Length: 357
Image (cartoon, rainbow, N blue to C red):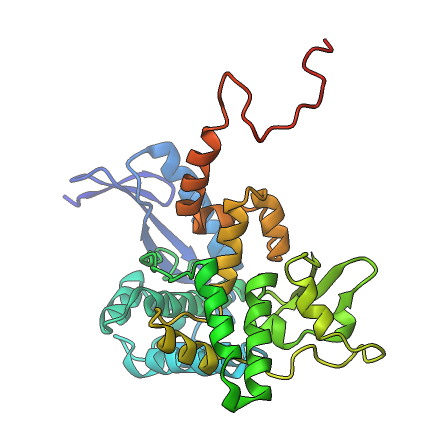
């Protein structure tokens, strides 16, 4: 007696474990599939969903191979940056060269375990593995959208959580020492002054190297006291205040009547920073570390996190700032908690409304 018992139209129950299976025909092809449930009502719904999925599959393209699908995918990513295209091409090459059942396997016959076996061939760190997972997911999602398959065999693959990196952040005093050390290199003359101004701007404006490098005289609005910048990472523009701490530096570099002229003549101060850190026996800070210093200092000074997020061009209401700088928030929170006293703290200015009620 067969362990599969027919319990309804196209619906079977496997006696040993009670799991329901579907057995249907679509375009003359018999399909058998576990419905992955022991509940009959759920099985009926899954059976109906399977039938609907199969109805939308384009059988005329059912013989499309994985190799052909990969080639098709590569044509859709050519608009990305060259480095991104090269990265995706490397991963696709690995798919075509090392797929467990071979790249000539029909896309419709690929199983979820094939994706797992392919990934298991490589010793990948979290970031690299996630890149491979993202790429293979995109390949099969494209086939899903084109109705070549009804389900993506990579849908179940999970992302690997990356360890939180320890990023070095200078104190404001270290930042000032680095700027002064760069500026003091008299043998470099003009270059030392340019590099020092560039680094000073990074720390006082809280912007990144790319934003500083592309800043023009016209981006500084002296009437409205704003700086308009462009975040290259997110491809979006935003404006920040002309902070009092950065105003003297920009006044020194102001060039009237030349709105398209760059504010800074250099695009990168990495070497100048490295040399200064070496001279001062400090950790090797990056250009990005000065933006972290700016954010940390703003939090410590009590600036609202949502405001800091706006200054950084974020559109998440401060979530990224809260997640990234949680260690600063705890310190700031403890200090702010000291203000919650019965007696009025010395730094609170009375509004004169307490007794008005």
